[in-house]
Length: 225
Length: 312
Image (cartoon, rainbow over all chains, first blue to last red; front, side, top):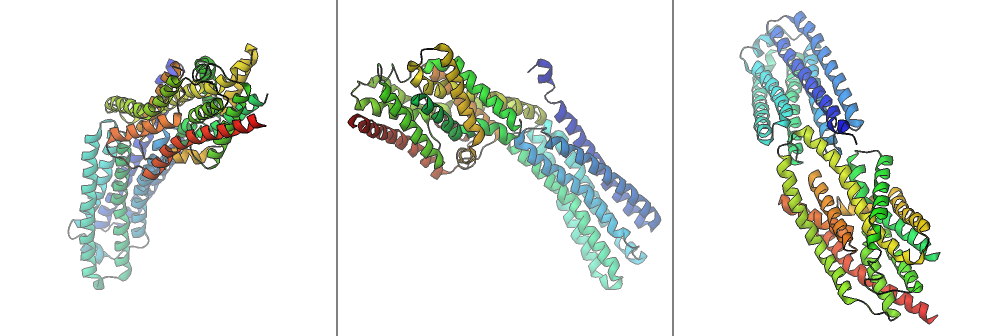
């Protein structure tokens, strides 16, 4: 084995890690656009909401492409065999985050919910806070993964932060759902179901971010970071 | 001719039985393709047997006894063949050194050759020491490596693991080629006078072990790896490296040792270094018990076959 080859041992893995960072960046952008969509909905601008959905769809597809390339690279033999499965699981969870953002937006796209329920849901900031906690969980996940080179303590601190955001999102989710169902009989049943499904699917954003950060813990347990 | 044929068969079954120890690391990690891992294993075995295998030439003949008869050698090979085959069929990791030494002592004691008990005691003492030494070396190497690895990021550690697995697997096959394959070669060496034929035989025996590795070995992999203990990649690599180092060191003193004993000792060393470990006691007792039983059974079986030969 030549000296040149020895020093290029990490090249393929470094490239894949850059791609993971790219996938995370696209995933964050997808979740960010979901928040933007909700802001349009709050303003009762359903056309802008629809336009923004196309952006979400585009970003999710791009994230999917990057994900596929990384998976191919890993399957072709990048990384040590002992962590390949963990990395694939982690990437799948990240992919689920973008999927959840897109799927949740799709629920509200099916039909325009009545203005009455939209105004009621956005009366307080709980729904927006819920989504920003989901967004922050994904942002922290990116820090966790990028920080794998920075050591255990950095990872533990940020994994804890991902969990905190996920728990907060759970709390807010329950609050928003309770509020909607408190006055459910005043709204169209379909609109109520739409918001219920939207919130449940959007919650998967934070759940998957937390699951991905748990896989980082497995990597740490195996001696990485 | 019969001895040579039996030596090839013993080597083949030995490869079949022990394949997990040196092939498993590469194939399970998925680092190298199956073909490349086989090439690496074969190269390790052949180079070990060719470069340092001659050091085991006097491990039994000239150490436990001054000399021996061709019949006794034939009985040693028959016993070793039967024992390794039966144990492999029952998925029990076999120690070639235990079986060979047991069989050698059994056959030669029947024909009344005087045994050098001091050398025999030294071999037995080595067997007792090997697991403990392996555990100790593993703990030291593990502590050293983990201290360095703490400074590594994911990508550096990943590259380290990928390179280390190749070096460790090559080294362990090299040491095995020198010690255990050298032990097989040492038994028929006095019968071959042509140096070219001898070199051809050494390579053939090493290739026979490699063939055993290629064709079989999955169940034994599980017994030593997954069933016994749960470890991290660094733990496995350090335990395998210290086993190879120990086996290589004992080769320098012409003492045949068991790679299984060394690896199991190493695995426990790694688990002790980590303090927290899940291990299967039943499998551990089964393996340790089998070491004692295998040596005794080989001794008795060899005696019985030798007596049958002498009477007929």
